[in-house]
Length: 64
Image (cartoon, helix red, strand yellow):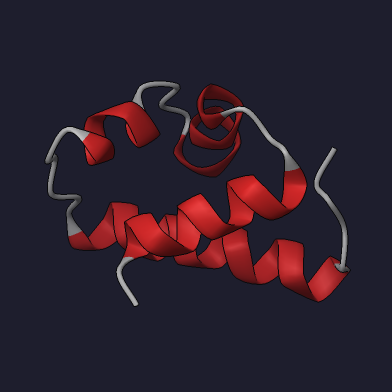
């Protein structure tokens, strides 16, 4: 599954705004919008996103 699909699923499940996700995950509020417009994230960005999603899943939280 692509990183954007994982993000979209997370956003839908948590009702989190895309800008907030970007800020919390990689300190970039434009992240999700840029990904939706075709931006290809680098390995480090993908790793940070994956770590953020894994941490949220581990906590079982909707992320505050």
